Length: 341
Image (cartoon, rainbow, N blue to C red; front, side):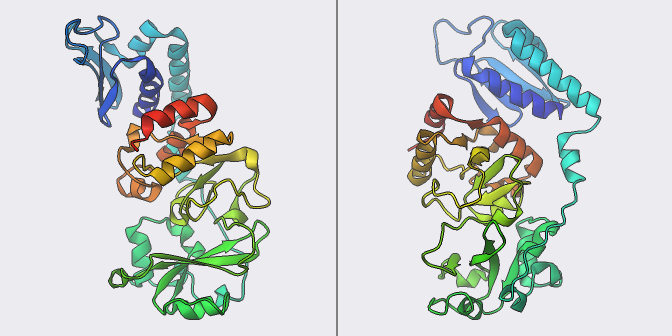
């Protein structure tokens, strides 16, 4: 946990460090805040943050200044140093990391009963050798969430019970049910299972009422008293403790009935070169919403599922989201630094 706290406070300090950037998750560099670095070459950076035995240290290769991260914070910013000392003390008193606390939480999530869904099996009832279960395992979807997903051998048959007029293929798909806040089935999303079906649309969303409200996934399970993380895709939401998915970027400000708008934190995909994503974040900021602007700790990883697959723990992702949740002017400035379009 010490390394995680150190990384957080390096990022908090970074806006005042000239030419700061992360080279690796455990190595960052900037111009030296002590000696100013080279007076002749303003592009030269010789001050390093480096990790050793789980903690960060600093060293300037120009003036040879070296100390712990705490020593640097004490020298540069007394208030930031006091916050840093407090968080380290609190972590030691707890005796275990935030990650361990998350791991011991057992979820017992039960979806509302529905006669349409009763016709197809949940992934949690299938054998470990079933292709749908293997797919979920490959995506590292938690076992506790397998009862939230279903399997349709023939997606067209499943869809016919929801929208008889819909024209879809009879391919095998993972079925993701979409409920209202009160537990009524509003629609389903089908995720193609077979790689050989690449010619088909990967995700198909079917609404029970075409004129009905905007579909958000996961509404029936939210805790309205806690911050609610809004992501783009349902699978991403399964890794977070209180999260919903918008099923894409269309109209993110069209919020379904019953959602506590004051608790929303939008964590869209980490795609700074995608104009649609960048524009959506900008519009959310202009509307006064809180947004997560991803930082270098997730590098060029596109979405939350890919972050999990790369080895970043769900608890770390949630912590990054909390730290990088911004609004107003600070969000606009962070967006300008993040975007690449």
